[in-house]
Image 1 (cartoon, rainbow over the protein chains, first blue to last red):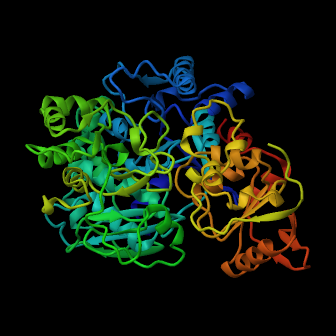
Image 2 (tube, each protein chain N blue to C red):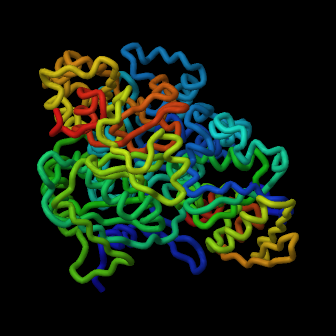
Image 3 (cartoon, rainbow over the protein chains, first blue to last red):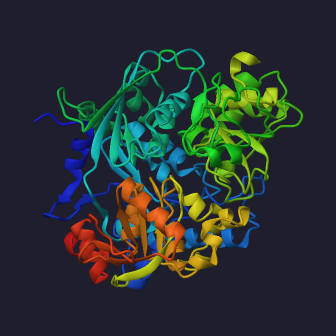
Length: 456
Length: 179
């Protein structure tokens, strides 16, 4: 029977399936960060259990750390304790931690792929909902809670109900200046923020085949924003070229054998999906959110729509239906996060910021997703372009995406952001977030108001 | 995990779709390394921003049931959201639908999640808003009985039900299988 890629990876990792029980699924790899792991290690201690497969796990610091130059001096006492806990837990368990001094520290979903830790056909989990990012490599990757982190630490397996599968096919070529961020925002606006709850998505289409790995990661990253725990793309030559010669990727003969195997890792023709949607992107224009969740997104030239039960969103964002989103003044701009903190995103921003100044009233934070991204940006001179434009180029971390470190948007301020969630107060208590692509954020920072690249 | 007992309580009518885990527990409270101490921060931002927010109403101070609309628990995977709900006294969430990760996290901590049709939720929401309306939830029979003598049956996964009723953890089962 023909199978889709999701079923193939699932079947490959199915350890036990008892009737009326969830499946026991083998987990190949886990990523840890400071925020969702300490309680899991405590649970193992409480039960007298050891980490079973430390070699299948890597850890880094990202969520609660400062992004200032002297970041190793963490002022927040509780955050410091959390970082110390991860250092101790990983050391005790023999898990490799990519700390501040490692040159690979970064947001888990940026540094994992850079290390070649993320491989096609594997199952990957992390205590973070944006683990779907790793699906860009043809991995089955999904976010889990802290209890499940403990399960994987102790057993290398997890209980899972078999998800339904959804094929999302993007029709047409990606127009000029339109990014993967606009594509995924369009999908979320189309199917809604629970449009794929209970599903794992396979993305396909010409536009996807032509996308770089960075763009594919942006796309898969936001799968969770339409409710899908995972979204993936079958691996191809672009995937293999990205992975070759990275620290964790297989070498020599095993590399060649792996690539041979990965070439067959795709959905069979005539295979079944529980759901299938097509989204035409041939006339896509830059997307931006107007409300308080990622489905409340429109094309930048559209007017804010009338939506059912929208009162809270209108009140919070201080916008009215029928108003234009374009030219809304912004106070802050943020380029970074596991969605858009990769080298391509920074290059795109630099291209727009080069020789220009950001508006005087705007603060623009540019936060590389990892040390590798930062070092590459410096090597290419992007940091100089950013600083000359008036932006602040900071150290790697989650930064202003989620307001759990020192980087916050002040109450009442409006921020145009490349991150993934515009929930109320997500970037700081009382802050207003508009999600968009790095191109739109850079352009808006220059203009001091929400505009697309064409407007500057 | 404690074995699940029958619940009798009024229900907090949180009349919202898409209650995300950032609302339930904002990220600024996630730097702790313990599992306790989250209850006092439950919905803290919404409580601060709006004096009329339903959880500020003392009538619901001791409620064990939270009523909401579609897609409850969406967004971040933070299990702290479930801990915060439990630590502020919640035993069950009744909603039209839940996010996948939240459902998993809830069942692993003994928090019951009940999905009911939009019509039924409408009905419950209206009554819970209007009067002192008591719900009694029996997980073993999978029914909710109201003080107005209505009975609603609900679906619940048999494995999760067994774990909840026995207070058994998934990890015991996993350890047994993967040995």
